[in-house]
Length: 183
Figure 1 (spheres, helix red, strand yellow):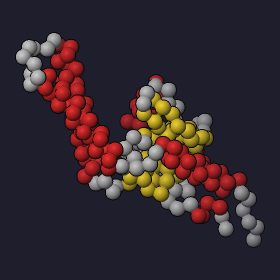
Figure 2 (figure 1 turned 180 degrees about the vertical axis):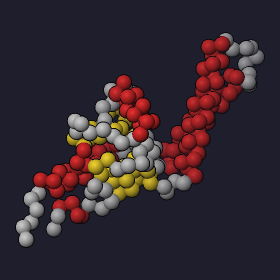
Figure 3 (figure 1 turned 90 degrees about the vertical axis):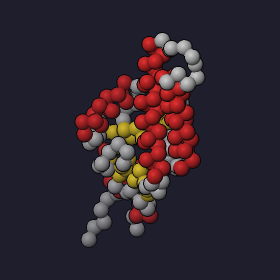
Figure 4 (figure 1 turned 180 degrees about the horizontal axis):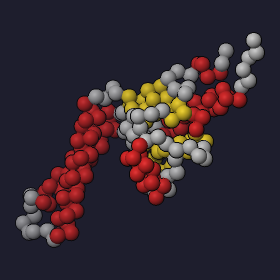
């Protein structure tokens, strides 16, 4: 019997409650921006910088509210897929990242947000396309070296995802080093 044959394929979805909280926050900030733009809360005209910031608030938080509402429209949909072969975050990649290309898995914090980061072996590059290459460059600018998996709206904690990833990574390494049985 092989050690990793007992590891089931795992699908992780979003947390409805966390996503509802993010939706409420996004709607609140979009409405705050709209109240400044349309003068709902004050009689005077805001200065140009504050007005630009309010328009940006409407666009960014309104877009976030739309994204979170869309996620809530199919709450049972899985976004993280973990198998004996690798891991895939459907939010950012269409392809599986094989465990053989992962050097280490860790948790990194950027401000108040936690990410599980897959550090790839030297010479390995994530196959995420042109948009992924831009995101990879942006991630390196903020100090994230590898493939980040955001856990904010997931139905699992960063520590739980880290433990699961390390279990599957260890099983993949054990399979790689195990000699084949002779016939």
